[in-house]
Image 1 (cartoon, rainbow, N blue to C red):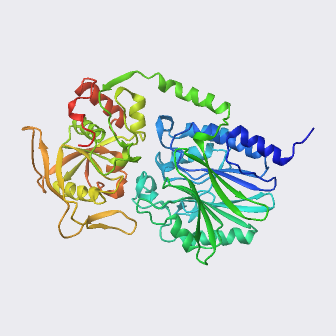
Image 2 (image 1 turned 45 degrees about the vertical axis):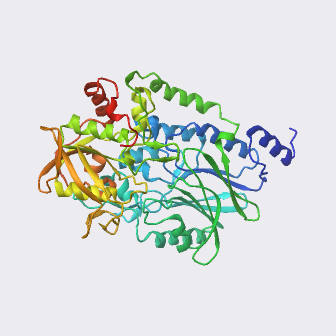
Image 3 (image 1 turned 30 degrees about the vertical axis):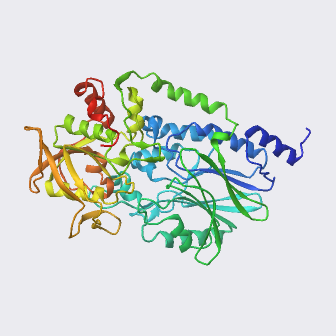
Length: 526
């Protein structure tokens, strides 16, 4: 068979795919990576094609994910992440590090997903307390050309409080798992030393750490606190980092890269024959190649949703995303937040409806609303619960929820049946435990004041009674699973395991609004 010179092969591939002009040598090792796909599964067809194109340049190719692939979008929601896993198996992943959102569906479903993945799951800091051993393999070592490459996986310790926290607690109320907050870097260093002793000459950290959400261990802190790691491929923060160099604990240079989110980019790490590491990002919108089989499989998954009937109409955009500034609206009350909180309150016959801003994941555009739009906006399939709180507890929770404004904050309250004013000149005084869990509000002035609760008999808002018990309807993630750092975890349970949030919202729109979003929700920010 006639063989083309390697340079000619590379040129043909560049023309076919629209890649940037980079030639991959036959002896180079290439690690292709993504992070924070969050259900944007159309990108997998291009990622699969990139893998095949790279294999035509070098046999030393590895494909990895840095987590948060199982949550986001209707297909992931209705399948609890399984559809994403099915498509990832078609791509041909080798290793994955868990993201915090892989834990959204509980431990049992996490094992179902990882068990059906053809890729190996690597996460050194998700540890079973009873056995003191990682639940998944901490690392894997792979020969890639002339290099023995060690891959170590990790997930942000903030997962303990941010994603289905009760999944980590046993019947006795004690933690069954730890994410190694406080011992993270020490444990990581032990694994780095171990893989080096085995013979790895390159160490790549598959990290889901970022530097957001008041994270306990950030990617930059980890680099500065350890040595022996050559490259950190990072997720969680959704940052676009093509190539950044940071100094480790010994002053040596460490390469860091991250591919954004939602398949904006595909990441590529190249280790050449001499051991030099470099990274770049490939713009998915400009990449011309595409796998032929994956779109067919996605179309079959999507077909049922595309044919869902219209359940309502809205003449206004119901917003949760500020397209002008390319960011979620998590520092104000929005009309979609109000619609959701109203549905919780009215349909549960509660005094107050409450949802965290981070629980709303997409806007609903003006026009017809199908169940697909509701799933896009509320993809977690949370169940509605009702708990009883004193006015004092509610006032404290509001103070905590508003504490980071005007910064975006996933815990920011979207409420119904209650109103309040905010003095942004007051510095918040929030007391938390060692792991970031909410304890109380400190002494001194508060930024939230003039709190008033709707009286259903008079339809007037009246000053909150700090000793009075109020019924509050929200999602099980917040009320029962310790979500939002436990800001509303100490209520007395009244009603548990009610309707899934999307179904309840649909019923509210049908029965209370007669299938049409009315003038009350016209204003985008309320």
